[in-house]
Image (tube, rainbow, N blue to C red; front, side, top):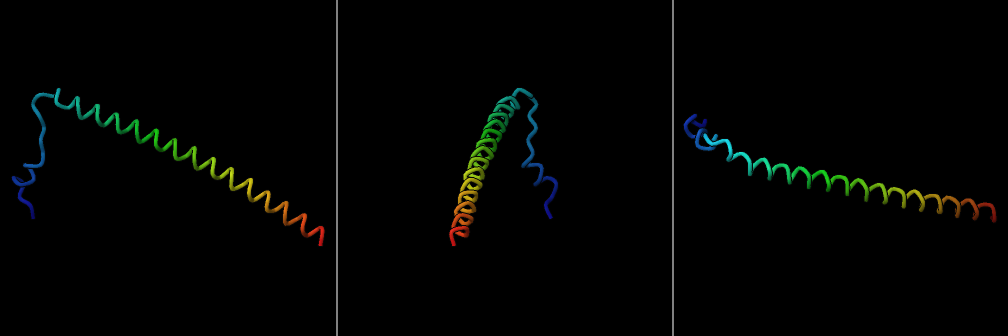
Length: 70
């Protein structure tokens, strides 16, 4: 397996904690972007579901009217 010394090369914990600030800001920006994207997808999905429901109702009404005429 991997030696602990090899794994330690991938870990970096800076002594100066101010180096975490850019990473935190970047993480926050991507988190906000992910939340906005999720809300946009949900909004579009609900809109498409409403359109599908209206289309289904139109088809049902059309089928019912054609059955009455027959």
